[in-house]
Structure formats: structure tokens, C-alpha cells
View 1: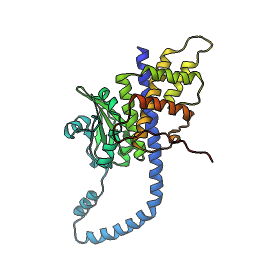
View 2: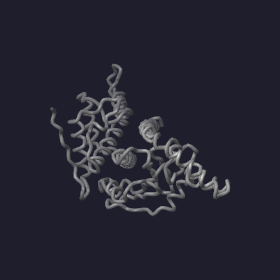
View 3: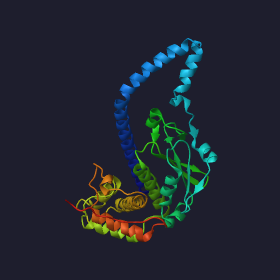
View 4: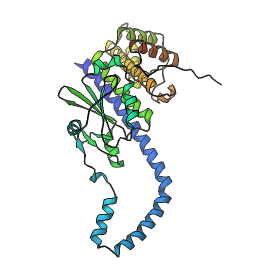
Length: 319
């Protein structure tokens, strides 16, 4: 019973950490933008005041209030939709690889870019995801006990939102991804692929060949790991406290986490060009690049890229 609970708790911890980092980055950007726009806002307020005085001479006070209110959109004016309603309303699409997905609301994602992103999931993985549907929405709200979806973005709703939210609808497991919480295409892509990777591992497990590879690297004391979950579970598995036995529960969690990470990074490399150090976090040392390359090549052998996508590892010269 505990063996089943621990991986789930660690996955939730990892999701919480990603959500907090996204929120901190978003708040920093908003503060910077506010500083840049304060002079413009003060001038706009002066102009608005002069306009209001002119308008007041032609309209009753009540009409002016309604006019001002209609020009300002607030969180109170945005209707939050239950996730079930969004799923029933939206047109479900099927990517070239067979994966089910749908955009809804003001996502600010071009259709062609979204299709390209979803299509990066290798076709060989899709059968294990046949009961999954991925919804790209502005914000997924999860602070009321039910999953609510915002059709557009406000700062207030952004503070209430989470990076993603799962919701079961009959035989379908829906995943709602908040497109407006991430910074850029890279952030959205990684959030999508890490969810796909965890969903795949939940359904199909970890290949024995990959488990043998990562454990051989751990035995060789290869530096770092690909996530905090992989780093901590690997450390616990190898920390025997003088005993000859290995913590098998921790080792299984390590296999799950490292395989999910490798799948996500592999799919990310198919969708966007990025520097491996962009994945670096403060909480743990990043896995040595040669070891990661070995894992990614192994994953590419298991799940070759779909037509139109290419897997390539480039090494930057020092100096």
C-alpha cells in the first residue's frame, strides 16, 4: 500500500515545485512590466480624467459609470467554466500521431504551432495514451474543490491557477494545461511533455533495458540527475546505511522518475531547439551530459521520431 502511495506523493511534490517556480517567474515579469508602464499609466490617467470630464457634460452619471465599467475587464467578469463543460463544448482534434488534443479560450497559441507541438510525441507511445485527452486552456483553477477553467487571463486568476489539472470523464483521462502560466514555447512544451511522459509510464511502465542502463550509471556514481525526484530516489536507493540490501521501493521510484524525465527531454528536443543547461535547477546537480545523451539515444531507439521530426544531439565547443 505504501509502495503505491509514495510515487504518487513524489509526483505531486514535483508538480507543486514546478507550479511555484512558474508563479515566481510570472510575478517577477509582471513587476518589471509594471515599472516600465507606470509613466504611461500616469499620463493615460490624466487623459482619461479629461475625457471623463468632457463625457460627463453629455451623459448622466449612471451612464458614465456603465461606460467605465464596460471598458475594464476584471476577474469578477470572467465566467469560470467547469472542466466537464469545456470538454463537452470543445471540438476534439487528433494529431498526425493519433494523440487527442483540443485548444479552448484565449491560449495565445497559433494552431500550427500547437499541432507541431502535439505531433512531436512519437507515434509508438500513443497507443498507451489512447484514453488520454490533452486540453490547452488559458488557466486551470483548482482551489475550489473542482476543476474550473478560465477562458482568458487576469493576474488574480493567474495566482489561483495551476500548471495542469487532471480530470476523469468516464473512460477518458483529461489533462488541462494552463498555457498562460508558462513563459514561452519552451516552458509550455516541457510542461506538456512531462505530463505525457508520466501518463505513459503510468500506463506502460519502464522498459527493463532502460532500468539496467540508469542503474549502471548510478552504480558508476555518474554525477547529477534529471530531476529532483530522480535525484532523491536514487540517493535513497543507494543509501543502505551499512546494509547490503538496496531500497527496492526507492529504486523503482528512481526508474519511473528517470524514464519519465528522459522521455520528456527527448520529446522536447524533437519540438524545440534548447540548451541542456536550461533545465538546470538549484535543488540538485544536473546529470552529466554524456550520461543524458546515452539515455536519450536509448529512448530514441525505443520510440523513433515521427515523420517530419529529427533527433539530434550537438555538443558545444569550449572556449
